[in-house]
Length: 490
Image 1: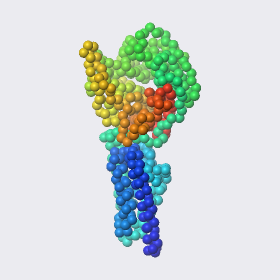
Image 2: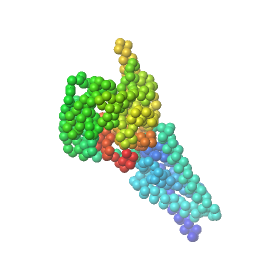
Image 3: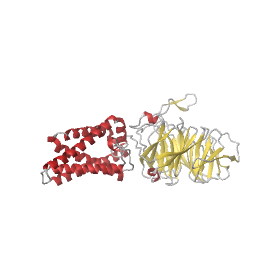
Image 4: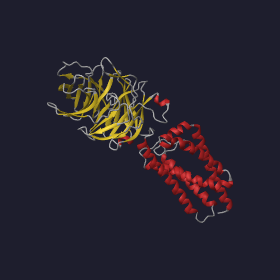
């Protein structure tokens, strides 16, 4: 090839790279906050987002500048090849080994899909190699190129492995919001803000009403058709204070732990009979099957929370395990939380309200695992006071809520967290509620997604069914269909 032709090709490659790097760096700089937030959602770069966001822009500007100086062009091309090899390796890992694919990181490639992004990068890697070969007189140039590319690849692989270790162990509280997780597919106006999801069965959702405890609203899974039922109790001679309805098909349960009483009936006729009366008080309860249940109660004399399990109906065997819930302050508020059951895993899951921990036990309340939610609140932040006259312990200030609502479906735990992570702006948090998703079988954080307000009403409660999350938001019932990233884990 003629020297003049070589020179023209090298000049063109350098010009293309200058345009690429300057445009990309300026685009990131002009929308730096968004660029940094996108890096914060990256499976590889989450823990290093602050540092990397600055360094990448700086390097792109520096290389573009060096490419414009003929005497430094050779060094700049080697730097270009190293940087593009890293970018390309990053995309390959994202597409093939990452638990999710985040948003792109701005610049000229923001409008490209990740596969197109990969092809684009491979093309520019090839151009850099061609330019280096054309201006080189070194006989060992191919070996040097191989070493450079291999070294760049190993750097990104190392970042990936190190990043995953930090995300799971050191927990810097950076949420991940991948695409194709969950999205609203339907909604229906309930015309009443007092409803809550009592349970589901096949293609039906059952809602109960806190102001009319024995009224049931049945809605089909497409949120199109509604039916109303009234529960009939065989006895009503109780001093009810906190009646709730739970659906565990084919049964439904009417409960009040302050009485305490438990009714059970079939959803086919909505007639309920007493199956447990004044046998144990409870503040939360889950029904494992028609003969087994688990509950939270308070043990005397201090009234600290404790979990119990009951088997049998006529003469139930009741067992308590005081070792499940771990006291930090008073044993009452600091151990408060939600109790759920996974039919798939045959496990009970207890999630604390005020600290970053959930507990997995078997059906007999033997602890299998203690795992952490993504936030870093290891100790409950509560201020309590003991009333002198009655001796009762009360909250002296609003509590620092960590995990508000939970629901379990299959192997996944859905948590409505009240804490904002890094790179999450005011605009989203003012109009949405976050749901974090955890893999119970492996005890680690998977991903998060937002549930947006419906006409100004934020999420009150939700229920995870087999194919969708049903949410009561204000006076609306929302259906958030699962994307493939959640469906593949359930």
